[in-house]
Length: 332
Ligand code: NAD
Ligand code: TDX
Image 1 (cartoon, rainbow, N blue to C red):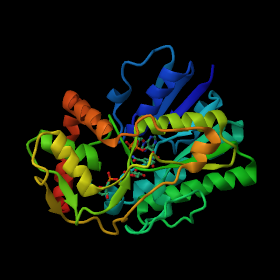
Image 2: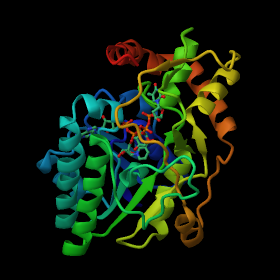
Image 3: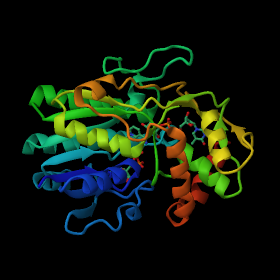
Image 4: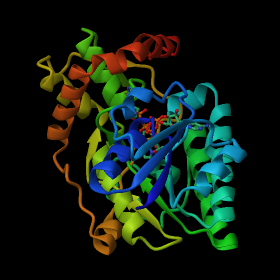
């Protein structure tokens, strides 16, 4: 029976991954999560007690990390400061968690010879023009724009160096924008859904023409599991589900699914340095490892996500007012 250590398992994608592993394998899972503003203990409640352990702690705590890694077969590293807008207001925790935290984990897996999978983002590649056919591939040069994406890029480079210099048994995945249940209300899709549930209006940054390549969080989890099963050590895999949409289209779909007029949204201040377009070519993952998304229909996945936020107000309500107050200070 494989023992997983999942960092950031009380966050959005980490908690979806924990449930995916418990549902699809007989593995045990230990979550290491600091429970920052972004972590929520409720996201991993009700899991089988004989297979699931929760540890509250910091990935920068070398002694704790070493002890947990010593008792694990596989480390999957999701923990991060993850929100671009926050990184523009205060980059400091991004440098600490995303860079020092990854360094701390790499030293522990080096010491114990433990298999490691590093969760990263397509934002490390910078952005694309709206009107070019190009998409990101594993060969695209790194060109991150924000404090968030530059610290993620730095963490990826640490992993590559630890593989080459020390023979660490690691793989890396860079995924596009995730949506689904348990995503914090600061992020684009949950913010707009909960605004409308609250009788308010969606808020589009700038003209709303920026493109994101959406994938359901459960498809991300399945891809990571597949990489752990069959991926080649030292390799990077891009994860994406051909889900390119501009932000205005997404907001219009949310409004329509919630029975509102498609134009009942506001334009607000744009994000400084706002990346224009992300798009993933996931051919390598599909052809070499045989992965394919189980949620190819974005509108159906979005409808299910809206239903989840309608049914789970108790999960998101405590964060909503403070999140909106913070956006209001930026005219967003
Ligand atoms: P999230 O912000 O929802 O969750 C992050 C989790 O990490 C939280 O539970 C938080 O408490 C925990 N954490 C933060 N600092 C910590 C520390 N120092 N020690 C221990 N735990 C700490 O993030 P998410 O959206 O689920 O993203 C998870 C990972 O996936 C990140 O590495 C992110 O870069 C990557 N990613 C996210 C997306 C996306 O669309 N959200 C896309 C591609 C990649
Ligand atoms: O209120 C909003 N209005 C708006 O127009 C918010 C919160 C966002 N936006 C725009 C900005 C982006 O173009 O929507 C798009 C998506 O925004 P975010 O949800 O903040 O995501 P993004 O910046 O694209 O980054 C996400 O995907 C890659 C995750 O937050 C990262 O962790 C991941 O690496």
